[in-house]
Image 1 (spheres, rainbow, N blue to C red):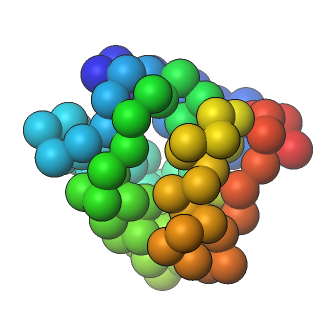
Image 2 (cartoon, rainbow, N blue to C red):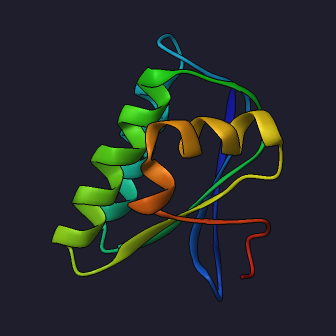
Length: 105
């Protein structure tokens, strides 16, 4: 897994590539926590480069959403692969957090 963080007009973009699972999720959690604690509470998690997502990765998204909201911001997830968006739909998380097809909208 690789994580890159950048700023855009949409907020702080945390782009993930590879597999987001029990082994790699802690690194994403640390990065999201670091961003929010440094005052960047509007977060876009770009999962368009993720080819596998498990429940641990989903748990990180839920935690980050809570942290961002507590800091006065929000969290949006970019997902382009059907197998990734389907996980959000099946779990009902698409009702709780905003999903989009690109970083800019």
